[in-house]
Structures are given as C-alpha cells and as structure tokens.
View 1 (cartoon, rainbow, N blue to C red):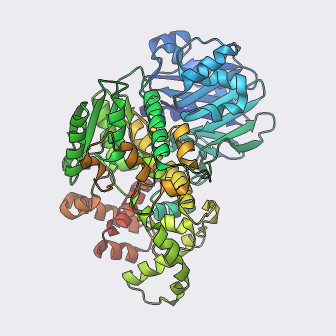
View 2 (view 1 turned 60 degrees about the horizontal axis):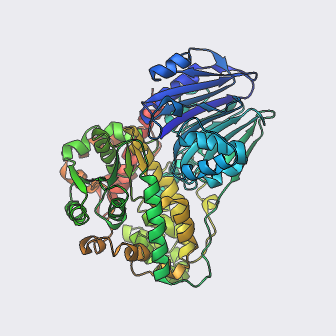
View 3 (view 1 turned 180 degrees about the horizontal axis):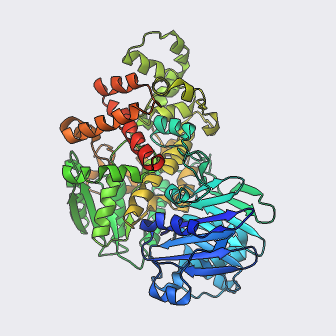
Length: 632
C-alpha cells in the first residue's frame, strides 16, 4: 500500500523538482521508503530520496535537481516483504520494464506459481514483482487476472508505451492531468497540483454533481482538467507519437437466467467470502478488523477467527452509536475474539476539523468517522484493517433500495410534475419526486443531497448557465429493475464515493483498509445471480443475512440498517463552536459571489427537514476546499 506519482513531458525535459514535490505531497501514504526513476529518451536511472531507507540510499544516489522527460515517484507503506527487495520503482532484469504500484494483490501467490511454471524466477516475496513478471508474460491481459486493489504505472521501453491502470471497482485512486505539454498522474490530487503544468481551476460540472450526489461522479473531479481514471480501465500512451488510448478490462456481469435456489447461493457466498477473508488476512504486519456493530463487518470478524485465532477487532464509539457499540462487543464476546472500543469524544471529533475537511479534495457532506478509525489503528500499530465496506452495494443493503418498487409504479404519474406551481418546500420535494424519470434520477434522489432545483437556485446564473446540468453522460444501461439500480450503486456509490473516502481517510494515517466483500470472485458471482434472490423489496441484504445466520447473534442480525457516520446535526444543534465555525465560513463564502447569498441565508436560518443540514455542510466544506486549494 503506497502512493505513486509521475509525469511524461511530450516535448522537452523538465526539472525533477516537480517529482520531488509531488512525492512529498503524498508522504503520508508511504512514510517507510521512497524512490524515483527518471528517463530522458535515451536511458533511465534510479534514485533514492531523503525518506529512503539507508540501504536504498547506499544503492542509489539521492535525487537532486536534474531534468528529464519522464519521472516516476513512489512512496512505500511496507505491508508485504518488508525488506528492500520490495522497493519501488521496480525494474525488470534488463531494465526495460519499470513499475510503480499502489495496492495489494490478494491472489499474487497463485499467479506467482503459474509464472514459475512458465519459467519466471523471483528475487522477492512481494506482489509488485509478480505484477512485473505477469506483465512480461501476459501484457495488458494481466490487469484482468489481478484480484485486489491497485493503481499501477508501467513503463515499457521495449514497446515504447506508458500504461496506467486501476482496479475493477476503483478501490485505489488514480488521478491525471493532460495538456499539450504532457501527462501528469498521482494517487492524490494534492500531488498533481505540485506539478508546474497544473494550475487549480474550479470545474463547476464536477461541483454540480458533487452537490447532487454527495460526491463528484468519475471521471470528473472538482478541478478543471484533472480527471479520475475510471475503474476497470487502463490508459496507454504511445511514446513515439503521444497518442493516448483508454480501454476497459472488465465489466459488471449481467444477471443469469439460470434457476438457482437461495440455499445454493448462500452456500457459495459463504465459501467465496471465506476464501476472500483468508487471502486478505495475509500480511507481514499486524492486522485488525474494524467492527461497526452491523452485519457486514461483524461477519468478517467472525469468519476471520478460523484463519487467525488471535485476530484483533475494534469499534469506534461516537454520540448515538451506543446500540452499535453494544452489539459489536456482544458479537466479539460471542465468537471469542479480542475487542476494544475507542470512544471518540466531542473534543476529538472537532479536533483538527478544518484540516481533516481540507484533506478531502472536494466538498463533503459529513464528518468522516473513518479518519478516527484510521488514527486509532495507526496508534495501535495496526497497518492493515479489514472493513465491511462494499457489502451494502453488493447485497442491496441501503434502505432506499426498498423504495425502488414503489418508485417504478409512481413514475407512471410523473406527468404531474409541471402542474405543481406552488413554491413551498413540501411542493418542491413533491415536484422533485415526480421529476425522477430515469433510474439515474432515482439513484440521485436516494443520496440525500441537494435537489437539482435547489442547486440551480443556489449557483449564480452566469456560472450555472455554463454547467452541463443534463448529466446524460453518466447514465448507464437504465434497466428498469433492481439490476439497473445495482449498476449505479456499484459505479457511483461505491467507486466514486465510499472507497475513495476510505482511501483518503486510511492513508492520512498510513493505514491500509482491505475489503473482503469486493473480491473478484464474490462480485462476479453475486452480480450474476438471478435478481429475485438478491433483492426482494422487503428486507435489505436478504442473501447476506441468510449467510450470516449461523455465525452471528440475533441482536446483530436484527439490528436495523444505520450508516457509520458522526451525527453532524447533533453537533450543529448542540455545539456553539460548530455553529460559529459554520457562520464564519458561510460569511466568507457569500463574499465570493459564486452562490446566491439570500439562498444560503434561507437554508441556514430555516432548517426544518431532517437532512437540511447536509446542504449547509456541503457549502461549508466547499468554502474550506476553496481556501485550501485556490488561495495561496
């Protein structure tokens, strides 16, 4: 688990100051080691950095200010093969293929055996070397074989190609900027902004989707001309003519028409989840399971014990999470694993609030509880943490999915929307409901964020008129059943939102989150199951609940679905510091003239609906994002 950065200058060599500053911007992702590889169209050289280990500094000179056309940077968080043999950038024996890799490949031992049979020899026990040899053997077909999370850069001097690739569901981020001068890429946007070509500009199309979905829909970001490489994709750059081609190496399987029983499906899911957990528990550093108290993470903790009898578990406690904390403790006691509860006080939640918000590279609608979870893991020396993230998307876990069948019926009455002329809040909500023509609209409504009409009234007309508010490019297959909704959940709720937040939260404290529910085999199997046994419209996660029955106590199985997040509304109502913090930032925001000040005041002074605070917090985090990335 690490961070990568790099650039390719199309026409002239540029200073290595760029790669040094880019790599330093993501130091938190890998404090254990760093490395560089520079190329000037004739030969490549490896360098160490100020944070490299002593042995690496003895092997390679420390990079000073020199010029090159191509530069690769790397930050290392040592998880597998802690020796210098796992150092990156890693080169093939002939020096003609160079790789930097951020992530973990869980099936790397299987792939290694296959490659050894084909005649390859290995000098380390790292998964990085397996990817390198796999690319030599299979080329771009390698990416589809990798089960894990990854953002990869491969420099192939033989074919004169530069390749960037990202895992199936986007668990590891990879951003890039392209202009007439060249291409820049990195694990975080912070690093891109250190390159001399990249100047921060607001991408209002990205901000608009952020306000509507609580996250910016990939491939857009909130920065102009900074894009996210989409999941299950690789991008090839031809060094001879700078031509760039993007390709997909995997797509979500369609549901099968095959007749299969629920019992058969539950048995297979149980087997695949066990296989995934056993692979993801592998590390050369301490591993823990983060338990929220719900089914997803508790089932992982339960099944982990058979593979690691001394597995550690922990739960983050915050205001109004008493029931979840109690259930997590009871469950840990039920299956006999070590368990600790970390109580996050109001003081801790508000500590470094501004810095934590600004760590995220776009506006956001909550306090991120995972920052506290990652900090606790770091303080306890857990470098690897297993998470239940992904189960809600894969198994129909969100409560709004239960409204799907009603919406499919009610959309027949959408013709009533233009007839609603009153402007009060209730009428606007009704109008918004009857404006959901597509599955994309239903998914958008379920995110509990700004409505399109609210965003339009907020954003100044001269800005709004330039925004592509139709959003048709984000529509997927639009199948009018659960399968259609599932596509949106997997692509936008999971890839653009949750795992992106997880990565930034964990890596801020140099911790690796892993996701047993997101293994290749489990995703492929569940996605291809007949819709009727995956979704019943009555109960969330029906298949996973059946799988968990023989492992978990009744209190966990019967607990209603609740998100793992701080109660921001509680802080707004009860903490004067938070209200003062909000007012200060809203006043600053109003002076920028991006938004209608009267609308901001109306939203702040008249919070009536349960989730009216979400819009306020989005505006506050927009202001803090703007301060961090656009003001010197």
